[in-house]
Length: 315
Image 1 (cartoon, rainbow, N blue to C red):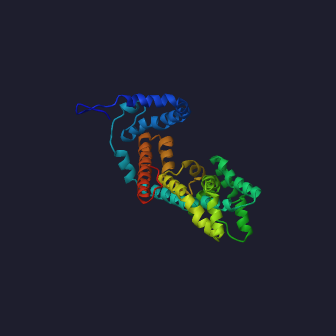
Image 2: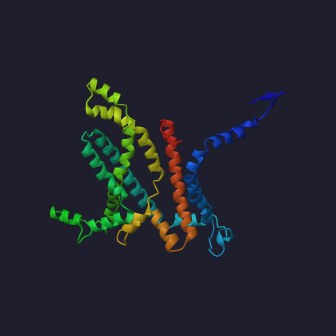
Image 3: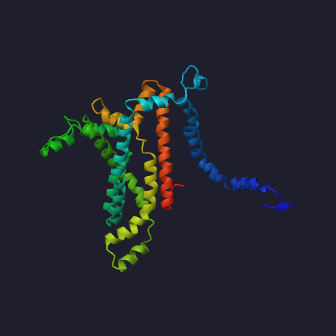
């Protein structure tokens, strides 16, 4: 920064240099423009409506004309008899899914990386990640068909083995297990691709040197492959914890029925019923905002913890 007669002068060329860099790389800005406007319009634009969580929203009066009531909707939700049930169902499903679904893609990636038969490796990868392309509606239909008490193939297989088949679709004790393992089957193979991409960056010289030193396959797996995956594992774990309360409502809603409601009703399905079915727009917005704020706090907290203990953080 230039100094003249004891006074600091702010460089005027700083803003000019910024515009020069933008003009120089205009192709890159055009390339990123669709994604930028997508999030601006569909993610940040609707945040204007968050204020109805603090209002008694009346459609005829609009958002600006509706009266402010502060935190009344939040207080109503916290004092309700179903608050702890919704919170427990949401947390238990998310933690269950994280505990089961997070390590499986890592195990599959390590296993696929050790395969030497190219045809079998490609076939195994295709079979595992193909379910990812099945829509949620079709997946729910398959689950209902396979687990139907009268015609379900899984039920018939269990009974053929001599066991008594439980009521997967109606028993609240089995809903979370059914939901989690069907989700793992659908998404584990796709998540494996991320870890395989990380393993592809391992220097082959490390394995060659380890083999020369007499390291076994398990030792190379432990001291070379797994440390390579740790940065990717850390980032994905932070993102998963940051969406701990963000259990999607689509599949749960499709599998939900009055008999399993005690374990299947989560915050997202409650927001759907309150907002779209019962037309309680302000109340449902308040519940959804509470859900989003808790997820944001979890994401920031876990990221800060990881940042202080390692170098593998989001920011």
